[in-house]
Length: 208
Image 1 (cartoon, rainbow, N blue to C red):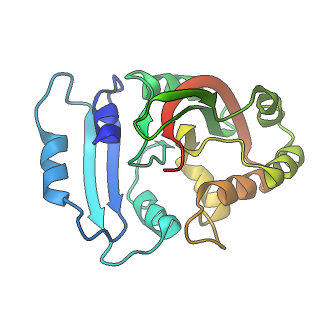
Image 2: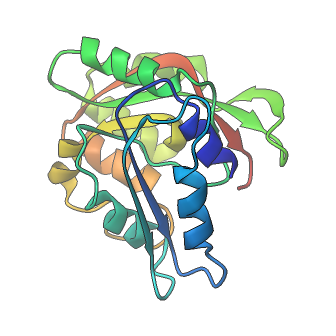
Image 3: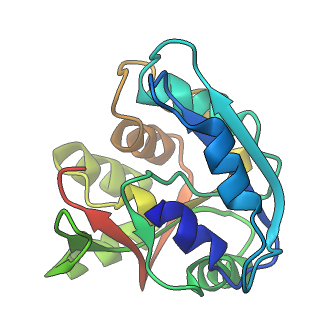
């Protein structure tokens, strides 16, 4: 419930929460629904909550694509249950950054703090500073060529305009599990404008 708690603690007032389970035998849908809707200090920031469960395991990519079809907001974050948002201001900060960009920016990448199995920071971050200029360069071929060598964009720290997915159709047309790296490559190849901001946005558990 760590990720759920970090979402429920956010100070942003217009959150749409889509929880999608990919065929788990022990997915406690009723308990999660009750947990999310439970009155608590600071609650009331979820505009909509949807829970879905695949009867069989479809793989990360298909599961996330099904969840994305249920999203109606302007911005989307794809988050894993084993991570946690860095602070209660994470979403409001990222949305604020996005609102200050020109209308052509469709992907905002931020920083992930690498953590151990108990979500304790290890002192490392995901994106090296040397990659910030590449992400911010507006040079799509350069971004594509560098991303082809290494994924230096932290998936749980990414916010996308929902319309960005229209450019590539699917998150990945080749993989069942890896949804982030292939989609960034395809977005870069299609000329989508990226931006990076050195904002600590998520605690990422190394190794999942």
